[in-house]
Structures are given as C-alpha cells and as structure tokens.
Length: 371
Image (cartoon, rainbow, N blue to C red; front, side, top):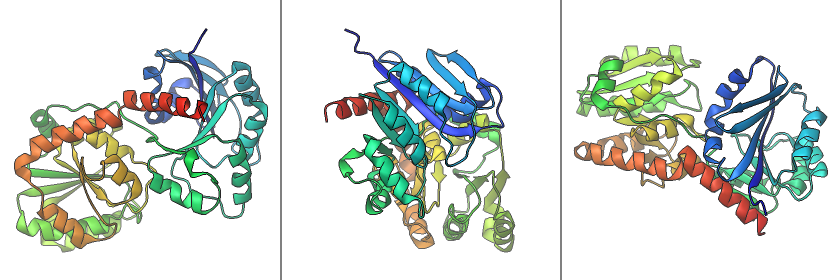
C-alpha cells in the first residue's frame, strides 16, 4: 500500500509579468524551500499562475503553470481540473484572500485536506461573508503565530480555533559566513555592528529605531547602525533626522538597496539585526538574519515573539517605544556575543529551516487526517 502523501501547493496569484518557470520559481523561492526536503515522504506539485503554461521539474519537485488573471471573481477551472486529476491528499493554498476560488476547489475535491497559509492579510470588510463561507471547505489554517490568528477568529471568519496551526510562511537558504571576511566584504569596521533590513515606511517605523539608537550611541560611540532598504517612502525624513543629529550622522550608514544574494554577507558581518515593525505576518529578513547567526532585536508583535522563541533567540521591545529599545540596547551583553549568535543560528535550524518546515507540514497532515 502506498502511504506517500500526495501534496499540492497552490498559488492563485497571477504573475502576468513572468513568462518563464525560472522567474516564478525565483519569486516564490522563500515559501517553497521546504519542498525538496519533502520529496522523500510526498509526491509534491507546486501549482503557479503566470504568463506561461506547462510543466517543469526541479530538485525532485514538480511544477505546473497555468495562465489566468487576478480578478476577484475569476475561477481558474483548468487549474482545478488538473488538481482534481492528481487526487491529492492535501492542498496548501497560499493566502486567505481567495474565498471564491477555495469554495470552488472544495466543491470538487473529496477526501482531501485543504489548508490556507496566512501571508499577512487581514479579514475583508465588505466581502467577509465570503471568507466565512469558504471556512466550511477549509480543514486548517497556518499562521506564523496564534497571535496572528486572533483577528480572524474575532472576526468570525475562522469558527474553530483548533483549525489554526503555527508554521512560518517562508525560510531561507542563507548560511552563516566567516564573520571577519564578511565584514571586510561589506565594509563594516565598528566594534559592534547593528543591521536594519526593511522598507522605510510607517509600519517598519525607522524613526523609533533612530530615536532609540541616538541615546544609545552617546554611551557607545564605537558602535554603528547600517540600514539596508528597498522601498524608501520615508528616506527624506530619515536623512533629515540623521543630518540634524551629530550622533546619528556619524554612527548611521544609509546603505540603500543591495542585491539579495549579498544579504547573507551583511547578516554574517553584523552582530545584531534590528526591526521596528508594528505588524508582520512573517518576516523574511528576521529568519534570514537568524540563519546567519545575527542576533534579533525586534518588536513584541506575535510573529516576532514566536520566531525568537519568546526571547530564547533574541530580544524584543514594544512597537513604537524608543525608550524600551534604548533599555534593551543598553542591557546587551557583548561579552557573550559568540555564544548568543551560535544559539540563534541553532534555534533557526531546529525550528525554521526548510527541513524543519517540511517536518511540520507532514505533522500537520497527520494531525488533520486523524481529526
């Protein structure tokens, strides 16, 4: 008897800008890194929508591509016919914002567990009734943290809390590089180096970060903060803040945008990763930093608390509270830097590496099958 799991990961979002498998695979890579670690236990197919139709095979994982569109009411019938023909045991749908599509899929599939993975969305306002209807066809929901599930439960979209599970939505293939050579490569020269990686916007709250560090740098004038960012909505404000502060102007380096493959060297070179987010479904940057032994200092939002093990693998402070950030920074024990960095890297590998996520996906199916 074949007990291999027939597993399909389904992304409804249509990438009309991509016309080759490689482009789509690259775009979704952080979310799909677990797949090659799953092939010894499952027959896995990743179903994508792009400006391309056809199949593809890579690292033992099958890909199936369909053309489509991103209309709210668009049902991709060809995609659903293909999925039904595979007779899957489990379908993992990326996102909680495709209720009509999930209803249509659920009406076609028998003896299949349908699971939705949260990607940071919030419940609909006007169309929430459709998400409630879709809940009838959903066997499980995946959130980074149960704290992220709270608003969905409170809104009545998810009626049964026992259908919620904790698995992070993405991982990384970054590995820790030699610290000294990485520092030379990226140009970090300070005694202690902090690293920001994120958008310059209100949710990421770089102003609170700079306010806390301004006080900290007065006491620690040999330390530095490097800021890597893509979207720069607040760049003018940040430049003005740093320009007006003699402390920040000499201690903060606005790096800007860099190639993603170079980030592993930045994380490996830095001692601490800093984030000021007020809301996150899950953070690519946080898990990437931890994989490289870069110690997190993050806000006490549900996803970050979960990923740092409630302080076992990092530090946190309340969002928007520069005084508490300063207190955390002032209390760091740099004498145990290597020991802490090793513990952070180990924690990532144990709980959030691609292999660990593959194990959790198998465990999830086992739990759903026995419910």
